[in-house]
Length: 161
Image 1: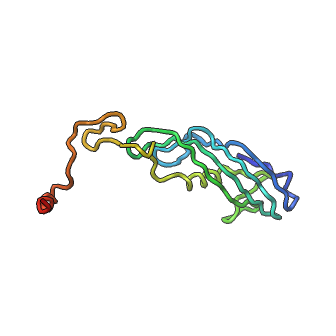
Image 2: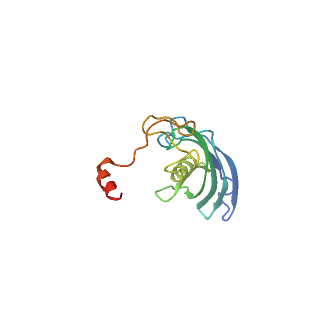
Image 3: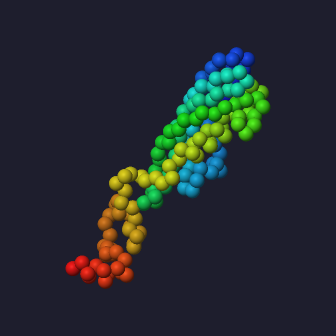
């Protein structure tokens, strides 16, 4: 997504508000079993600080995840905020402005990645899959025998009787 800053490029202290969607390709890597359900919505402000431009924005992405317990796919909204700096020179501190436009796509991608949860569940009450037969315990009960712990500790269990 390109933000046109030609209205504020010569006015120190000026601000430009923006709102739009950032579209990523199908091949964009968000992690194993994670993908976008639709484009990322972004809104914020670009402010001229005298050659350096402050970029403050909020993003919202509908992501498709795979539950860590039952392996079902589900959609969850991830919200995040961004604070970046742009300049005409562009270096390791600042993102680059070219032709009076700031491309915020990389900033959105990096900030979204940093805000993705490491482990997601379809619900807090998810019971997961049976470790013996693989049945989804959210949908039905299985007849598998529940193990009573590690058999190597059976002798210790007998001491408690």
